[in-house]
Length: 182
Image (cartoon, rainbow, N blue to C red; front, side, top):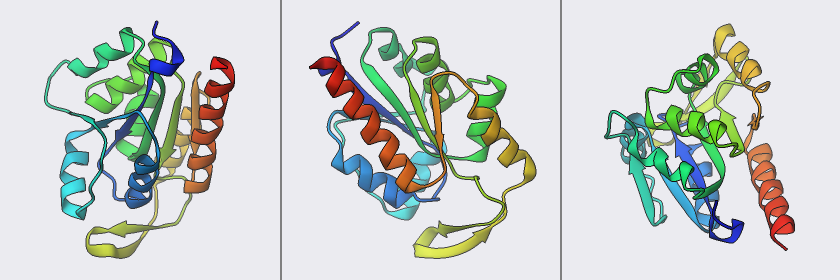
């Protein structure tokens, strides 16, 4: 296991535009972040025209999710999955690891690396940004909200429902790591 000072934050993005701009803004303010993109995330970042300035970006291009091997080497202290689509949340709840992002979540859990998940579908009615800065009303299904609630019961997993909670959870985790390494 690497010392905390040498570990990074792993940030995984799924194919949702819901608060994507705000997630990218948070990423830009952090140090030592590796980005993990689902196939849909790579498409949506381009579609929305968002840029990032992290040094390492892993894309979902291998059947076995090769980049998860870094979890076995102790490269990461925390995983953030934001934004997380209802599809990704459902797979995580069901224990399905068939994408880079769901594999990152599974391997983080197996390596006891805490995860922070910003689930997109947290309320019965939401406003979400569509491409070209157009806001749309979204009505998550009951199953989407139920899956988000189930995910809250998973070990080493913090589920947040808005950007303020996401930022607070990340800052609390970083403060805890700083105190632990002092």
